Image (tube, rainbow, N blue to C red; front, side, top):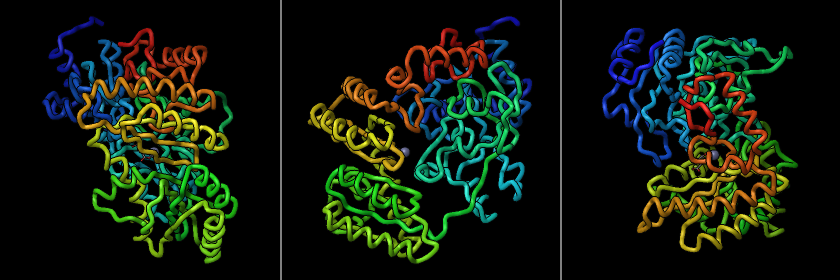
Length: 471
Ligand code: 2HG
Ligand code: ZN
């Protein structure tokens, strides 16, 4: 095929197999589809293309190979690491028109849907059938299943249900070569060699396009109860974790600092109780029978006697549980105006107390003048540390300073065998730090996998790592 650099001609070629109204070049579309929630990069895609079928998506990938066009797969663009950002004249491929639930099987308890279905729509669909899709997070109303799978999304229920990976039993993908693969076909067991499905989960769009998924559903939580506890320090938080987890089946164990709480209070939420403490823990558990709540209350008393908590509240209704959840879930949105520098770290939970102590000492020393907010899914070892840009500081100077401190933080994390990204992905923001979690030999295997699926480097080039043949 002849190569061409003429954008008009290239886009006209796409318009030959995708309705021209779905090949957009207007400034609004290029701005909105060219960025995610990071807001750190200036979006600059060549165009936004919205295929309406698997066939059209496949034609697009083949066409991109012929003309060496870079494609950036796009879901709900709620990502926080720049994986869905298009700032290098790429073509954004949005699957939002492919948003149908295709099949439900009550015996398998599975649902097959197109990649553009919004996460909350799957959750609601499951609920209508007395079932539950347990991958859950604050951006559920905008994020799409394809994007969740591409980042192996985690969220607030991982302690009990695991990540997206645990719930995907089948995938239909178009590889970077333009081949359509049907992976695992909804099977629970399948020991027939390499499981390519798992390579696509968490691949951040670098191996191909995810176009359909079969998801496992499960039984819903029964009468979940939420407690918010005020704790004096990070050590006490870890003591609460052991005590509550030993006696109750927890579906969430989250934490946030008083500094983080203040931001959601500024947005109109109310303090959970009068006493302010440096940290808060949010615990959720099933309460099918009253003894679960009685146990939680007894544990509350024991922990208070030990000095591990200062006060607390327990939900008495579903709506109160939802209100308490907002104290944690609304934090990220409440600080978005401060251009926060985000860390999304993972450590094994057994190593969390020692890591937290070292990280706390480092950040207090290095950021004397910055507001540092701690929150996250500490029950599964995932910590979100957000550093807020002081008003007067220039964004570039702020990011440079945070980047330097990150090197120290990640060195400590490396000693604990942790990860620089727990659930947000690597994308662009964490790419410079990948070597703190994966060594060079391992990264060379990642490159070899990329080469096998995407030899021309057309799929989301420059994300996760730089490959030698990025488009
Ligand atoms: C959350 O857990 C999200 O609220 C966002 O993963 C985390 O804002 C963040 O850093
Ligand atoms: Zn999170």
